[in-house]
Length: 419
Image (cartoon, rainbow, N blue to C red; front, side, top):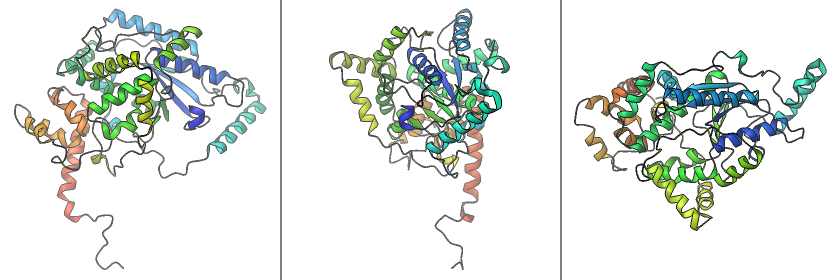
């Protein structure tokens, strides 16, 4: 997948987001093999690893979380790559800038992949001539594992106050569907912040073909039809400076299981948020059981759904400013007017009860799907501080723009007297 699409250039820093499950573990093993292979088609990027501990919201005790962290750290240390251990509680301390699109490289000329490969090979030859040939085989000449990084080794559980605040946030959410969406949002923001602060320009996730098919139907049911190509495609560039890549999306879950079994790939399984619950408690569980049930009788079900998603346009909707991007998912707002998408019932329910003004202030900042999720997330006071801070920032910008709107010139409007 990586060689065919050529989205990762030689020498580029790539962060591998690991969960310890079968798909992400298989992705890590394939990256190790690709970096060590002495062939012309070997991988030439500089990898880093990140693991986010979600045990606090999944019902694990502190002892169980410590055990999982120790197991994951042992596996990550064996790779020799730099790694970062994080806890979901750290998402509560993120800056508001994580909800803003990075500068990206839209205005810069993109070098060709062939030129980048030739430049990388030339650089390695120069390093070998200078006496650094022992590190040129893998392209990791500047990486020596996590020992020199103060944030990577010996990570411990966060403070109890942060854990309690995170639990209060999830307890305020009304439905399991909204809880799973909130968990994905916090995890994504934390990984994005890690990539930005550590200098990584690409993030690789281990979403399999089975997971992508389930996600496609789930997001369709959640009202994210406008963003299906971004949420399930091979490349997700909504963040600008950090691009999300899904290299495992052509492998079925069954194929990954066989690969891990025959090649002895170790995994660390942690219970998901919906463990020991009925299958109809959330849209995510319902869609997963529906697809897997069909797959038993019709083996081409998942591949058909996946191939159908491949036909979706990968070009995301353009947003000229941050005010036109969703506060939570960072996609371009898919709402031209509340009347057109039948959102008036949603807005009316937000006008009653305590704290109606603060809840109403969030509505214009969210896309259709995030508005539905926001309805079930309890009081805005329980939201993470960085989300509330960015919402205040955008609201102030919107009010300021409204006040000076009559003095602004549109792009297609010329000044009086201009020829």
